[in-house]
Length: 259
Ligand SMILES: C[S@@+](CC[C@H](N)C(=O)[O-])C[C@H]1O[C@@H](n2cnc3c(N)ncnc32)[C@H](O)[C@@H]1O
Image 1 (cartoon, rainbow, N blue to C red):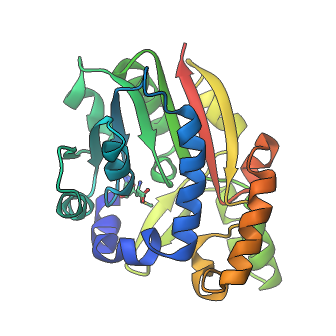
Image 2: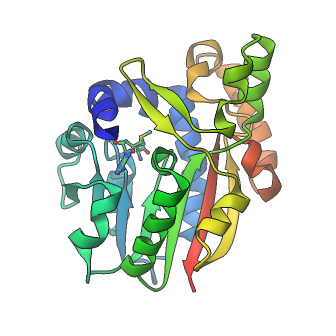
C-alpha cells in the first residue's frame, strides 16, 4: 500500500526533501523545463497527480492555472491543504481511480513530479497511460518526472562502497526506503521503455534532472556545502539541455503529447 509509507513520511517530507538544498535545486531544474512547456494561451486546466505536499500545485496556481491536485496519501493531501490556502482543488485519489473520478472532464496538462510514476509496475503504467489519454484534451500534454534507471552518481557511490545490490537497484524492482519511516516497491524506466509504454502518445522530449546535482540522500555530505552545490549547479546547466544524459540522471523529465 503506497499510501502507508507516504502517510508516515508526510509531516517531515518538506523538511527532508522540499526545503532541502538538493530538493530545492532539483525542483528548480524541473521548473526550468516546465516553464518552456507551459503555454499560458493553451494550458488552462492542469491535473497534477502524486502531488505530495502541494509545492508544485501552489506554484502553478500562483501562475494563474486552474489546478486539480491528487495523491493517494491522505496525509500528504492534508499537508497540501494546510499549506495552500487557495482555490486549488485537492483530492485523495490513487492513480487507478483518476479516470472514474474525472471522466468526462478533460485537462490540458497532466503533471507528475518526483517519482510517483516509479511507484507502479510497467503493466499499471500502461493502463495509466490509457487513462491519461482519455483524460487529456486533444493535443493535451503529459509531463512526468521520475527516477532515472541508470543514475551514474548512485551507481558509482554504491559501487565504491562495495554494495553491488544498491548500485544496481534501479535496474530491477526494489524496495525504496521512504525517509526512514516506510518502504515502497519501486520500478525504474529508461526513456526508451517509457516511449513504448506511452506508445499512443507522441514523444516530445526528455531532459536530465540531477545529472550532477545528486540524489537527496547526499544532503548532509554535499547539499550543505554551498560552494560544491554552486559548482554542481553550473555543471548541471551545461548538460541540462542534452536529452542523451537523461537515463543517467537522478530524475528524468519527459514530455508526451496526445497525438
Ligand atoms: C516522492 S513523492 C513526490 C511528491 C510531489 N510530487 C513532489 O514533487 O514533491 C511521491 C508521491 O507519490 C504518491 N503516490 C505513490 N503511489 C501513488 C499512487 N498509486 N497513486 C497516487 N499517488 C501515489 C505518494 O503518496 C507521494 O506523495
